[in-house]
Length: 222
Image (tube, rainbow, N blue to C red; front, side, top):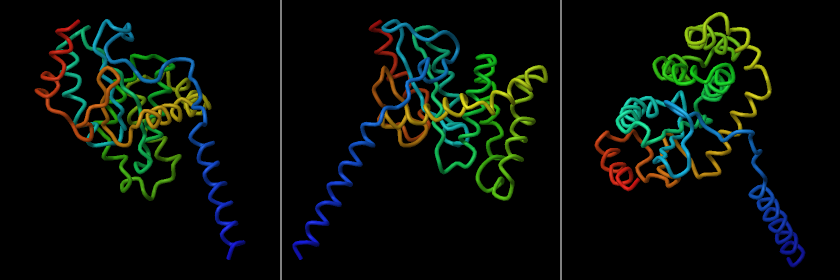
């Protein structure tokens, strides 16, 4: 009995130590900060209210939240900055591929990112789990390239996109985006932060009036 108890305690100690090692694992530090800035240059610290959103390009809630969020940021101009972070949910089969595509086109020309994102939102039902269930991954990737990416980047950039998509850097950047979201406590999409503080209603699209009533007092203090 004592021997059995000793073995159990030893196993518990090993598991505990392993968990500590996992918790302390260092997320790879990217050369630039994660996320894509909507409508302009990254904000200078303290000069604008910073809204961050963690989104999955194949998430219906993210698609529904996006038009309102754009309208809000456009309303405030330079006083509010929006940073969009890819956060591919593991239960959306092709969200990682979609997020990787965004990182890839960003390396070609950053102006391609948001038009491509909106293409994913517009046609995302074609890439839900069920419509792609019987298709090989290579076929789906080729469809995304021809149907969604090509109309945005043009034929002249197609070879660069394909090379970049197969480059390990786009894979690594997408993994870092996901790990960065996890490190900040993101567990679903859309997930919003204002000036680094999570918004409690972050599990669904937020109404325009909600954003205005929340941001107006912050903008007024600038």
